[in-house]
Image (spheres, one colour):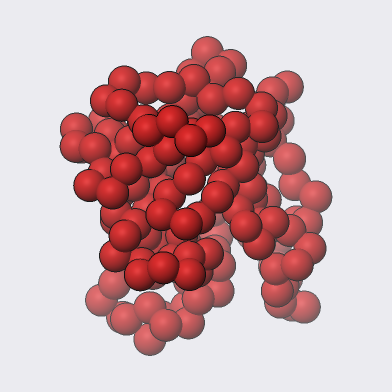
Length: 165
């Protein structure tokens, strides 16, 4: 078994490329992701022997405008210019339903020109919407990108994710 350097998940098989919990790429790198991409919250477990590469509790992005996804357990993810695909690996810990109702590549979120956008499963590599739908403020996402605004609620299966700027 392999331990993820980002979220410390210990149930990853040795041949897994990505962490089953957070989606961090295990094979390419054995170091934690850069601090500006992930913010750790106080209710997440931390190792007392923290290294310099690990995340600080109060880490913030350097841009003036910082967008975050807030998950049901109050953990959050800071959104940057790169596309971030969110799917089953990220959300299965938050659902009370069958995790299969969450697509592996459910939605993509990114920052462009100081604004934040969401697409239903579409990325630079994949042009396929999720099979299980994504909703923002109870409206089903279409094939077009949608601009996110402070306070928007993203619904995937039974998982509600808040967007904050």
